[in-house]
Length: 260
Length: 260
Image (tube, rainbow over all chains, first blue to last red; front, side, top):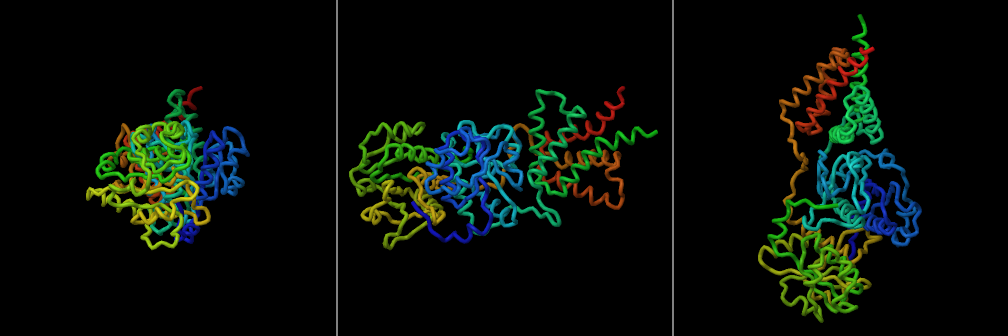
């Protein structure tokens, strides 16, 4: 099977998504995922806590021809660290797991990624470990979930195939079709680091005021709250507004009440 | 990675293409190709002179979960025999090899295959041996060549990946692409009344704590805050969570501080 070169120029015109493998288990799969990336013109691979350490000779062996992708792969010790500089993150998952999250097909995601790239926003796609897929704590870090429409009786893909489908659609989408676009005027989309910093602030205040006092419910409440703010595609300016709201709701009122 | 089930009926509505592997070399590749077929709802596999004979235990082992495809595979001693009952045949190849032949993308081919299926015509797709691809004598047996648009510097796919891309496009061609879909599970989208009620609550608390104290800026701040929550497509459940957050941030803390 092979390619034509009609998309070459378009493919490089907008920034390619970063592929983030979260706790990949087998070196071979990292290597074959790198090959699938190379097939689709994707160059930037990030690894979060690969099970067998890094560098991994089996990954190198399996990546034959995609050595650059492996050599340039960057290692992170947490998913938040791996996505901190990105503006938009997709999570690939088999199950909704009860989270309220927009779900798109790879084709729709590809159009959105192209549109984001055209606005110079950086995009990433998260893939979970081979055995389990993305865990509950990582899914809320994604703005949107990608599900591949496949035979419902047999829908599981291996890691390299999943990367291939996402990359393939991104490559095909080189034709200029803008997807949903958020008009941000004078401001810009928040980075994930800014968003996570807001979550930290909000959750600290919610702990302090007792909203998250039930330890058994805390994880799911935190995930639900993160998901709803994640969906708003917040701008940097809006993040600052929300910091202000949390701060003043929690503190100014106390100060005012203390006055005689 | 996984599928949704909204395509089930469409996928079976038109006859699926037959996958014809010509002189496949490795049993493992026959098995993984069968899995890719199963992912895409393709059930009919034909083998022309597989190098290591048939049946092949390695193919069975690699086909885990797609056993039916392997068990029902039919063996042929020539490509013409394997395609005799088909109405339309596609050949997958990396190179034109100087042949005058229509060339289509997998996406175009998928639309044609769906149309042919709707006319009750039987369609097949030829894949050549792993090492060489389709040979010169087999390409003329195809009506049309399929080429996958990929990175021209690195366009080769393994057998299972090539089958996956063709099958994936065939499966997608049945999909009536819906707009972005928000999975809301047990809950439902909030009504506008619920949303406005939340805005009223939030804005009252922001007035009380002094966040909106600058009268000249108040209207634009209120609009900005409403916009960001509006964009989140909140559910009824999430509106209740937000009411709780506002209430507890503003009041619980005050109550706690008042305690000795």
